[in-house]
Every structure is written in C-alpha cells, then in structure tokens.
Amino acid sequence: HDKERQIRIVQTTDLPVVDSLVYKMGGSTENLFWDRVSLVPADRWDVDDPHRSMSARFGGWLRNIQLFDASLFGISAMEAICMDPQQRRLLESALRVVSGHPPIDRESGVFVGIQHMEYKELLVSHVGLSNSYTSISSSFSIAAGRISFSLAYVGPAVSVDTACSSALVAVHAASQYVTSSQNSSSAHSISMMLSPDTSLAVRTAGMTSLDGRCKALDR
Image 1 (cartoon, helix red, strand yellow):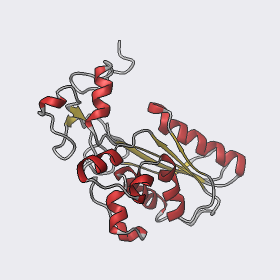
Image 2: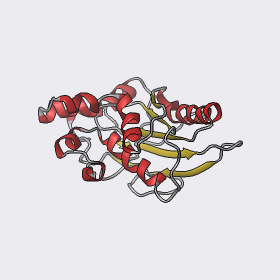
Image 3: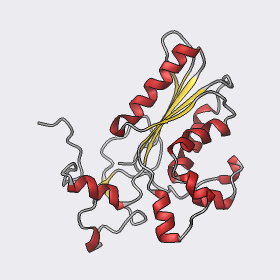
Image 4: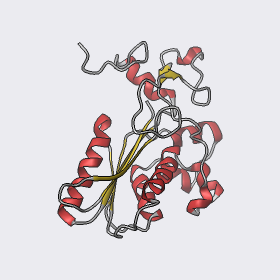
C-alpha cells in the first residue's frame, strides 16, 4: 500500500506529538485510514497486461502523485520531473505540518522512514532520462536532506530503511534525538508502489493476499 505519515515532536519531558498528518489512501488527509483497497490505478501499471499477471491487482493508493508545486520550494521544472514522487510528497507534507506553528529551533532533526525507490528505473526505462537529478532522486539520504534544506534545519537528517518497520524506527530515532539533544525533531514516512516489479517479487514469494486485504498475524 501507499502510505505516508508526518509527525512533529517538540522538546518536553514526556515527548508529546505536537502535530501529525496522515494521507489516507485515496488522496485526502484524515487522522486514520481504513479499508481503502482498490484496483491498481491505470497510471501505475496495467493489471491486465499478460506479462504482469502475477503483479498486485489491489492496494491502497495515494492519488494525484504527479502533482507538485515546484516553485514553492524553488525547484526547477526539470528537477521536479526527475524527483521521486515520494520526495515531492514528503516536502509538501513537512511544510504543511510546520505551518501554523511557532518556528522551532534550527537544530531540529529530521528522520524519514522509507524503503522503496523505483522512480529512477521508470524514468530511465520509459522516458530515457538520466542526469544529475535522476541520480539524487534514487537516494534515500536525499529524502531527509530535502526536508532539512527546505526548512533551513541544520540538525541530523537521517533516512532509515528497516522494511515494514521504517516508520516506527524513524519515530523512535526522532524521539531519541529530542531526549539526547534537547532539540525538537520530526519523523516522516513514505511508501509508494510505482512499479509492478516489487509487488511481483513479494507475490511470487507468497507474501501477499489474493483478495488484497491484509491478514498479518491472522490465524
């Protein structure tokens, strides 16, 4: 499933969450999202392609991932095209979380949970683009670095990939930084399925449900 969470943590004794944002599958934002499973959108991949018969047919999908206000972040049109949609959405969501709140210290840390980078392969194979922008689009470290750069933070900018626990580990790392440094911190996570190859691999391994519904830890 496509997933995204943004959490801002401030310096206090009991580490309360000051603000949070969850993009629900389907496109809008809510506190929680449940049962938004649907067929793969046509702009991801063709579920009826005989060469992809084993790829996922169902999932939870963030809509309009191609939309991005590059000028808001001082990013050129070419760089925006080459940016992984996950990096674009992280930037927009991070800005949305901090807006409306008093400025936090410049030493604020940024921790991002992320595990898929499929966009560069799609650019090269389908569009033929390969340049300096595509190289950083496929880097996990840039996902956290873009947020820090855009918000003028000079604290740690760390991306973590621990598979399905990436979001939880990012929150833990952010909390640890607040405790150890007495500075504020934010945790972010993103996971977009842009290519059928990843879903094909996990389905071949018998890790997916035929009806598209998650049954983890189910008896």
